[in-house]
Amino acid sequence: MNYHQILTDITKKVQTLSDRGTSASYIPELASIDVNKFGVYLKPIDKKGCGVGDFDEKFSIQSIAKVFLLIKAYKIKGKESWTRVGYEPSGDPFNSLVQLETENGIPRNPLINAGAIVVCDILLDLLPNPKQDFLQFVRKLAVNDAINYNEKIVASEAATGFTNIAIANLIKSYGNLNNKVDDVLDLYFHVCAIEMSCQELSKSFLLFANGGIIPETNERILSLSRTKRVNAIMQTCGFYDEAGEFAFKVGLPGKSGVGGGIVAIHPEKYAIAVWSPKLNKKGNSYKGMKLLELLTTETDSSIF
Ligand code: GLN
Image (cartoon, rainbow, N blue to C red; front, top):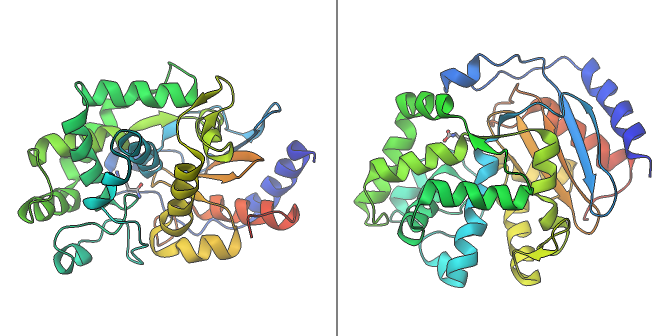
């Protein structure tokens, strides 16, 4: 399979579409990004990767980092992780508060904001230096020490994150946060403000395509069974109330972020990351979704 040729062709097709999305202006620092940026990088498990466009430029990975949060907690707590957060799709927007009230402060899954906020609380109890330890973990997955938080984006989101502040307070009122709301949100905003390029992001997700092992270092991060479970959660919850649409049109487990990034994996084959800042109404990259749909359609290959 000549992936470079395929990516070049489908990028051209996607670039001819009029981009109907808008960037995530509710985080002021993200609103200033050039919305014409476009990058894609595909990394096969055992071959060199290839990319097109701005694949080497770092962007804010936002909610994509919720997958790293989840596996950090899952590695330490195992099945006990599921007592304070569920694994069912929410069918609601990523920042919804609605189910929290009817479900006693137990978020539906770890890939919506409420769920990731609870996982941050779990990690605050488990890690001696939560922000530094978490960043080290992501650097290990990416096999790259040049991964960092963008403090400007942390500050921007902290200043305007009223919905997340409300979510955390509601969860706290149900007794499902042990730590102070401010401390939990400080970790959450940092996690969302990790920056990576498409090239770095695809590499850091390769373990999910490789049965839980980082191919470059041969280190096992998750068992086969847990890898299956995390991939299942990405498939059913990774795109919030558009998870069905992504499964229907793309057919790969994946995760999006409001920075305009999407990462998806094809088990035993590759990880792919795409970046295009304009988002559709559900908060997922408009052109990123289109590109992945074209990839699996034109290569006749998905998990289904
Ligand atoms: N930091 C963003 C928020 O909490 C993440 C949302 C996302 O990427 N979907 O609103």
